Image (cartoon, rainbow, N blue to C red; front, side, top):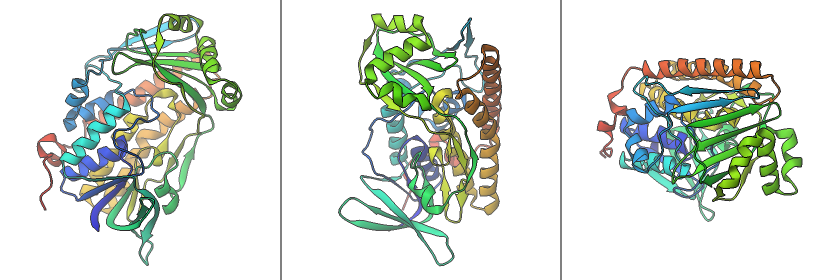
Amino acid sequence: MKFDVIVVGARCAGAATALLLARCGARVLVVDRGAYATDALSTHALMRGAVLQLRRWGVLPAILAAGTPAVRSTTFSYTGHDVTVPIEPRFEVAELYAPRRTLLDRVLVDAAANSGVELRYGLRVQDVVKDARGRVRGIVATDGRTAYEIEADLVVGADGLHSTIAERVGAETVVEGKYATGTLYSYWEGLPVDGYYWRFQTGASLGAIPTNDGATCVFVSVPSTRFGDEVRADKASAYRRLLRTASSAFGARLDGARMVEPIRGFGGQPGFIKRSSGPGWALVGDSSYFKDTLTAHGITDALRDAELLARAVVAGTAQAFADYEKTRHDLSRRLFEVTDEIASLDWTDERAQSLHRAFSSEMAREVRALAALEPLPCLLPSASGPREA
């Protein structure tokens, strides 16, 4: 079996990368150890750059058709006051969205399949295959019964935070974070929120994100060093207690709402930026760039880098991959640094507001960079038919 590109991981980063490469004529295989259209830990929130890309790729209509609510404002709630910022129409985007991952990942995977991508679920990658010069030439994967060696000109690791591909190719960590937050979240009905809502106070933070089926994702975050002690005895009690710690007023609003899914948690992980490409391999999504979930920018990162990587692969030169590395790092570094300081949960109201302004400024720079990319006809939805043999 031989492919132009193997993408390991069928979540939003991997599915988007595969979709774009297939539209440009590559023979692409996506393997994933999980199953089709399953849920994933996620903050759901799409920022302007992500909405811009989904619209350009022609996949946003499917997300809207599923009833994903429009987000027209963001509220930052501090100890002393709230600041509500309307979403102003810019760069073809007038509204934001926060689709469930069962929807977003499925839409991207289906679009990839319709563009000719071959998908294989239930395959766990054990190793990469290298030639005598050390260049990656494929993968070894197993379905639990049989091991398969699959050859490709390029292997893309989109296999998440603890990436097997990143480990096997020895991807170097170039930036490391100092802080991490642990998070508990669930979904609530009967809790109307007007846009994204973020509450910040020293030691705790919460967020409310309107998503599909009339539900609102409500999360609460505390320093990861405190997370284990808080949740070990009783996750449900810890969730309620921490929500009221972050905002007693918001916690009281939940008394009139109904929790419709089990509480889920993530203990936290200090952020990192890793080298993103090498001989015969590349990384995208959390496998190469992860920052604390508190700023809810991870999906936007993933979609941005999927397109930057796809453009490098289409160009096919060493300089193009070097440019991918440079551009990705340039657009990520300041966002990473600001997120890391926010994740300390140790600041004054004034400092928190300053950090949010800096983050907003960097997101605006990111959107300008995406909007300025020269159009590649093969990335457009009109080119999304299956690849001819």
